[in-house]
Image (cartoon, rainbow, N blue to C red; front, side):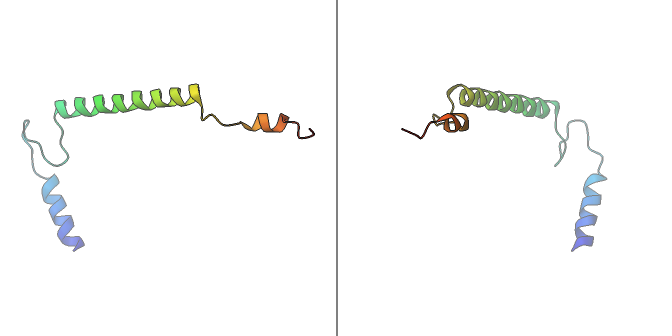
Length: 73
């Protein structure tokens, strides 16, 4: 099984692709630009969600408030 897979792999990588031919692991310039744009968009969304989370918090009581709380009432 491993020998068969390695032969298939070697045949696949040894093929000389033309400039416009795309294979399994070959991307065109357009594909790379799309992937980069998508990564930037996801990074912006993650940054925005982090900012929203920091701004509003979870609405709970933090540890400092619990430490300072006086239980002798």
